[in-house]
Image (tube, rainbow, N blue to C red; front, side):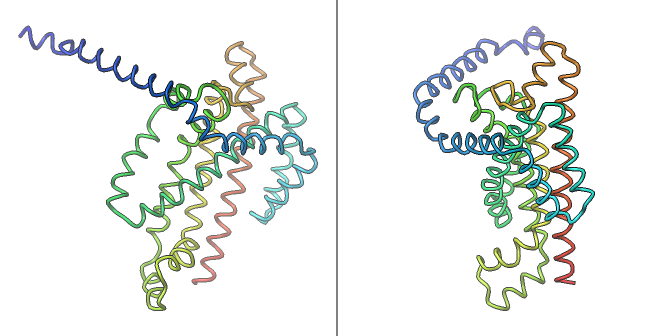
Length: 295
């Protein structure tokens, strides 16, 4: 009975020693490998700095015209074009333009990285059930892990700054890209694949000319979800030095500045709506186009 009552505390010393050894091992690893890890991520730092510089130095009328053109090409809807332009004008009128451009550049870089990393992993998962069964639990952990936890190892490895925040955002936002790429390719009709085999297509030709085009609407849904999750991480990433709309929100929380927090929060919502409407409209256009071709 005494053993049962003391059960939760039997291994306190063992657990304490285990935690201590893991922490000391991780600190030793960061001291020994920190410089080489930082050097490895230097290209990423340059990419982010240059994209941010381009966004902040470009005159606002050019940005508005570019956003309007992208919205029109993606959606062919004047409502989405006008809504995007009006939202950005409102952000500029409330003196949040520079922070918004920094946030957009961060989201752009995160989305590009998620696409470059996520699509090949999704393709590999679609070709192997064993790999899918191995990666899916990892993705489950990534999606259920509290977002603050991502900051701990990244900050210990790279310190505080833009790149650690970028890496944390990518880790948080990439699972939908991987999952929906895998799903989209697996949902391609088997009859279409058999027809491609009948014409003597190689695996690469089937992937490039059949599977990827047909899976593109689902992949675009993955891009949409990745953007939304990256925007959701912006405020949290501001805690480790990521500039943009998240920092004024964090400042408002710390100092109880109600209007500062609300305005910048609404700016994040506005950007999210713009990205969401444009990407969803483009995905729907792709789906209609493919239905016309194969219908």
